[in-house]
Figure (cartoon, rainbow, N blue to C red):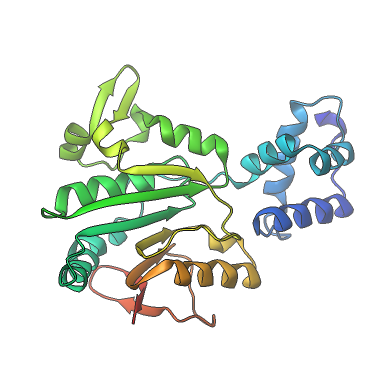
Length: 273
């Protein structure tokens, strides 16, 4: 197959439109080589298919479609990625939420890690909150992704030795169990997180969220899809809440009700009404 791989402009249009329709991710000419590479990999495992016949199969086989979307949407991640965001959580966001919520007697935080990939982000959040939240405060985390393969890895909670770079030594001792070949998340941390499949173009069903992380995801969406996702977040969040997006992402120029925050630790957004 690979020797005869032909990916025409018409093929590119067909595939990019399908991906956009299914999950809102936009492939441009700039990242076309990434899409071509992913399709080539898929066809290596399907030697009887061509680019055209595989596309037809995606339209009639939901299992093949989901597997394909897994392949083209998986993002790399790591523990404590963009440390500044977690510093801002510890020193600003959590103290602000405690002040705002405790008067009502609500001592529980709800967090959503949207586009959680293989789980490093929600586990990082859970470890940090377990470390810094004073009693009687509790929390739970919803973690979602469009990649079922990534979600399976996240739910397993096993990370090879080379994957735990960035985890502080006290956290590694306290929140992981050493197992052959790597580390496994401690059950106490795993119990704080619910992993589930979710397409960000759709309503999540989550409500009154205190913190939303959606980092390095909307950069792959066009303007219309970005606005849809951001508006969903706003509607899902509590009256006093915070949104973290990727360091290369911005809501500048978007018609949104979020307020931009820049402090000593990081840049992020808040809903404060």
